[in-house]
Amino acid sequence: MANKHYSPRILLALLGAGLLGQGQAASIAEWEGCSSIPADVDRLACYDRVSGRSQPQPEVAATPPADAKRADLQPGLPAVAAQPVPVEPDPELLSALSRHWELEDEAKQGAFLFRPHRPNYFLPVKYSTSPNNTPFQDTLVPPDLGLDPVEAELQLSFKIKGMEGVLGHDNLDLWFGYTITSFWQAYNDTISSPFRETNYEPEVFMTYRMDYEIAGFRGRFINLGMVHQSNGRSEGLSRSWNRVYAQFGFERDNLALLIRPWYRIPERDEDDNPDIEDYLGHGELLAVYRKGRNAYSLMLRNNFKSPDNRGAVKLNWSFPLYGRLKGYVQYFNGYGESLIDYNHSQQSLGFGVSLTEGM
Image (tube, rainbow, N blue to C red; front, top):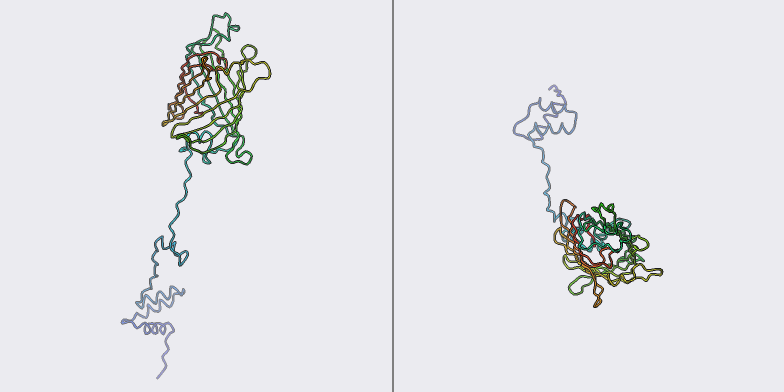
């Protein structure tokens, strides 16, 4: 029998059909079409399609639950629950004393940065029941002109932290403060609307942070400082004194108490006001209460002498007006509203705006 010669492509097609053992054979043309595909992967896929075999589907592994994933990180160990991320306290939620004196780490702003010290305000209208004309009798021409009972008052006050952690103590900070208060006869055209009095008050003090309980209050700090106060005048109008003081800060809810006793440093040269302690006493008490965006403060001063008891009371109220701007009302009754008035008693009521709050 003569040998029959078949092309290699036909042999491959027949062999593929026999090996697959399918009930129905594919056409030779289809097999030859697959054999002409150059890419191995595509050619094998074609053979599978022609022969009726389906491509094996890749197995998709089930996604394990989150807890199982954590457990698989270290086989043989039980899954550990995720630890909550610590949240830093909001400085706005700190107490007024903490923010003002930076008693918490979250309130610290570093050194050499200006901060409010005492209240900063402007009172365009302030009425006094008894203007003090006595010191100015020699300067007013004619003398009967006198001061206007309505004037303006401005106070600017700031402090700067010079150093944190003094002498290696984390709770000890060094501060510098400066306050200027001016009384302006703005509406007294007859005497050219002068600034009748300006008081300058630089000071340096150390703040020691503390935390203890006493009589239901929380003791927060002690300030030890030295302060100079003067009006920058000469001759008969000069007023000045120097003091060392300790200031104790307490708080309870929205109420802050500051107690500041002082000692006057004796003057070496001529004393312009030797009896100033008889009127301004040996210390003061400041109470500050905050409710919402309203702040109320009370200052008390007394010489604790009898029968010549003298002192002063000051009431302040700041309330929201617009944005950061606040209204400001101030009432004063007693001695020493300014240095030139240290031995003069009067009542005054002023209205204006508060620029920043202070203590």
